[in-house]
Image (cartoon, rainbow, N blue to C red; front, side, top):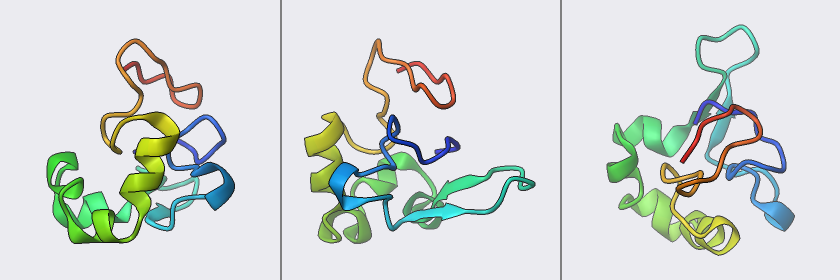
Length: 87
């Protein structure tokens, strides 16, 4: 996830705040916003099966809020208002 953590992005967990797995490497980094679980696991497919994702509660919150797992956002036909990625 290279988007900014704003209200329209899945890294913003609504009333739960910004996802604790999101790391901000700063505006001068090649990739400012980094999912630390995905970075550790190496891919979105591995991330969504990782214990850190499932047991932390992040998976349930994201699925309830946006209806898909991280990495599958935005849903097909939807657009991220922050970075323009189309699902």
